[in-house]
Amino acid sequence: MSTPVSRQGGMKLARWAACGVGLGALVLVAVLASRPAATQTTSSFLIGKVAPPVAGRNLAGGESSLARLRGRFVLLNFFASWCPPCRTESPELVRFAYSHPDGQQVAVLGVVYGDTAANAAAFERQVGATWPSVVDPGERIAISYGVDDPPQSFLIAPDGRVVDRILGGVSAGGLDRLVEHAVAAGS
Image (cartoon, rainbow, N blue to C red):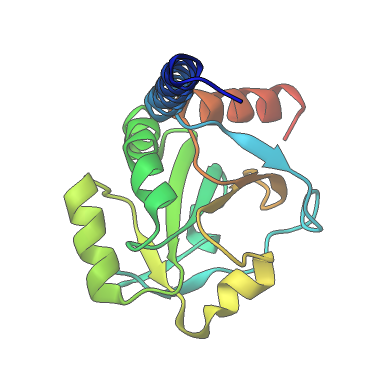
């Protein structure tokens, strides 16, 4: 039979254990939230093949296409304003785009995924995105790239071939390394 003293000791131990677990979880969340987005490449049926066409009305009301960007590397980024990882990666995309002014060597082309043009345009204004983004009604472009959830990006070589597929958020440094690797590999 337990005594009131041993029950109190067990309660104190349980409280300390709960506090320790809570503190550990808080530290883990803080560390993960403060880390920059990774740039994780993954295989795709498109790697090494000519990229499917991307063309259509952009958020500014004009026309944009992947074909017009031929001759330089292109980061094709599928995004949506409602996507939390897209919001997290957007400062990194802006940093990457601004580190290559006027499309020197690299251009960014966005594709709106499952979102309205108005919401996507407001999102891009909010984050400072200045590159063109194509509206994708019916997700035809996304389907041709095998995209089923944003954010996803594809690095396309100057000759129009897909070099890498990036699942999830990107980092400017990671994207620069992918481009450097592709240049070194002769893409």
